[in-house]
Image (cartoon, rainbow, N blue to C red):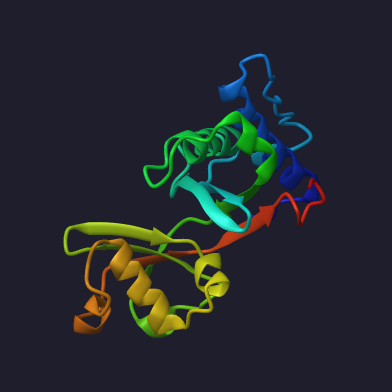
Length: 188
């Protein structure tokens, strides 16, 4: 799925306004123009990541969109700000300190060999040992991980030991993502 710069800007503004609206219901959430931006009506998974001072402040998303991309991004933004169990709910004074990043996901596809994994291109979903975890494609790049470290981090996120991937070929799915943030799009 190719997203235009105008659509990226709309989705970033939408995410920020959805968060602002939760803190102040008088703030209006922008309405999508599906004729001008048809991709906003498509169904795709999406994650919204909030960073504060270059540190993670919240990240929530949906592997598969539950409705139009517009709704998925709006809900992911609200959950990243107020529903990520790793962080307290965002408070009004933090609004000016956060940077919003949106990742629009492709449809997940199975990985049959670790050789298929391309660090920086693929995000991974682990569904094995009765556990589930997901890491976005930008995570290993941001943390300087190689493929083995990426797999270990995924295992650890699932609550497993870091070398679980060496014991057997894990049940993995991969996806790609179009990732963009407010700074990159000139909104900050």
